[in-house]
Length: 126
Image: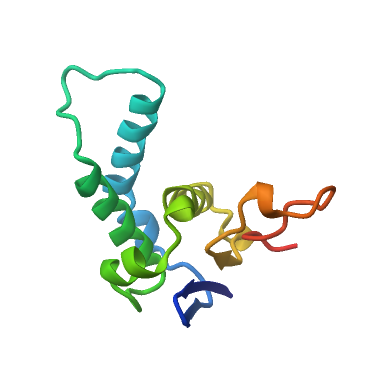
C-alpha cells in the first residue's frame, strides 16, 4: 500500500495502475527539460516550458497514480514545496523501472532530517 498525506488527509492505493505508465510521457518530457535546464544544457529546437506549466503536468500525473483521489490544487496547498518535484520524480522512476514496490509514503523525508547513521527507509519499503 502506498500513502500520500496532504494536510490532515491521508490517501492510499494498493498498487499503481498501468495507466500511470501509459500516461507518463508528458511528465517525462517535462522532467527531461527541467533536468537539462539545471545542467545548463539548452535545446534550441524546443520551446522552454514555463515553470507553472511544467509543475501542472507533473502534479496531474502524481494525482493519477493515486487514482485522482485528490486534485492538483490539493497537492499545491498540502504538499511541502521542498519535496514536491523530487517525490514526483521518485514515483516516476519507480513506475518507469517497474519497481513500484519500493514506494511507501509521500511526502518522503529529506535526507538531512534522518537520524545520523540511519539507513534511508522513509519513502521506500524496508
